[in-house]
Length: 122
Image (cartoon, rainbow, N blue to C red; front, side, top):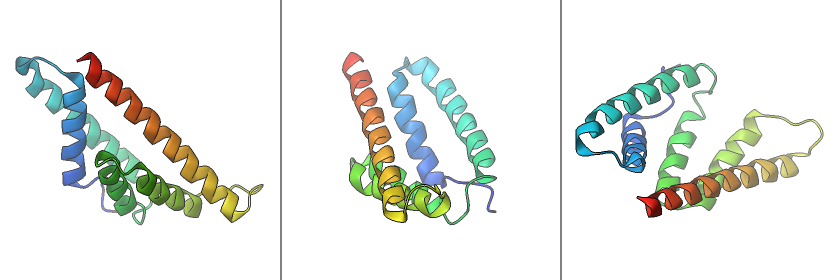
């Protein structure tokens, strides 16, 4: 185990996205950014104990694809990775793959919708 799930670059991108969503006054932005970094680092270290190292690059690439707006490619990558790691005995491999890809796609689009609504309010 390398001790991290997210790369430094991915962590920095996530910090920026979350910080921008909070839309805080400039004098609180530094504090918020520090707290966000600490929370992501904590999550990063804890998640590494459960997420196989072979999945780490897929997660980072999927986050980058999502941030660039390519939800279908991100869903496909994460869904395929999950299907390889998690086995649902009642489903065959194709149905299991489709379940994970579609579930991830739904979640990514839901989060994107929430982010866009949050930006409209700001």
